[in-house]
Amino acid sequence: MADVYAIEALKKALRRLPGVGPKTAQRMAFHLLERDREGAREIAAAINQAVQTVKHCRRCNTLSEAEMCAICSSSKRDDTLLCVVETPADLESVEQAGVYGGKYFVLMGHISPLDGIGPDELGIDRFQRLVAEGSIREVIVATNLTVEGEATAEYIRQITDLLEVKVTRLARGVPVGGELEYMDHGTLAQAFNDRRSI
Image (cartoon, rainbow, N blue to C red; front, side):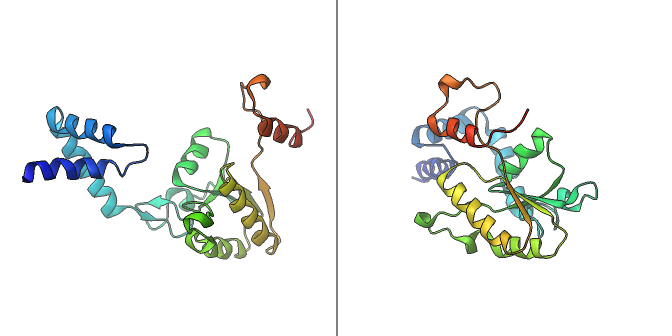
């Protein structure tokens, strides 16, 4: 039956989204088909439009509709600072915090040998060429604080050392509003290692 196939295909497609399992996909599919067909059309049109028009910025590798994203094109951004992040979502988080005025390079992942992801899959060669151009004075490594993120940060540090550029890493430790009694040992140890004068 074609109708059963269409519903199963929709559920299977929805399961491709992160964090969506079989039950959630079924709930979403039935909601869209039973109660919000107009919403389903909007979602389908928006996905189709994005897939057709969004590509990678030729400078920083983030997602963009233009050849160069708005951040890379801006003359108001500091060209001497380059923040390396894993994903466009990480870039958005830094931007929303409003604490950084430089430019970015988006890796689109992290080094993960178990998943078959090495430096070549992350566009590290593009990153090296960008830094080698000579205008960048500091590379801020803002990869996640996971085993893979740390391995990626170390790899970036090693190749950037060869280019004689200052490399910094985001500080780690006790979060704002955090209470010491609830911190894990690794977080507390890092907070003590990264302490600063007040």
